[in-house]
Image (cartoon, rainbow, N blue to C red; front, side):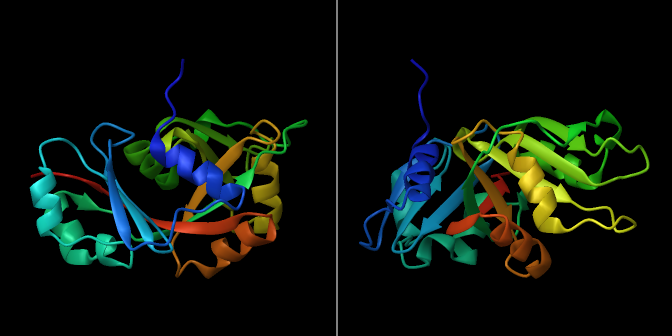
Length: 213
């Protein structure tokens, strides 16, 4: 039997409108990817994915809570040590549409900076794009937050693509009805509007780090 990670479970429930209880609490869970930790925060409840070398007592001493405390920069910095810390992102969820994909595998885009970033925090990263060779629009499909399919993208500025259309095309890569996630920086308004227009809904926040303690 395949074990579903708690973060995948809670995000899948949120995609159906079932959110964690707003109690100000927090829970500790296992990291879903070796070498990457993070905090996933919902309205009034948070999840800390931290490895075993950090004791429960240490976590408690950092005063996490579900009202923003679990995402406090001091807490994140303490847990990351001298390691890399990602930006605080919005988590968006949608369901795959399946069907005949418009996008094709594009191994030539594997060294794109966005693909390299995906590889550093996600697993099984595959790069897709449009069939026209000089179109460098990139879509990444990975095993991401909690083990769920995670979509990332960047449009080619020299092409006349609408971001929302690219997101919709990306959802055809995922089986119909399967929950998919995307992470978007709040300040990246153009990308955020594209995901929202294509049917993604915001459910939580996430901040990742690769600890060096």
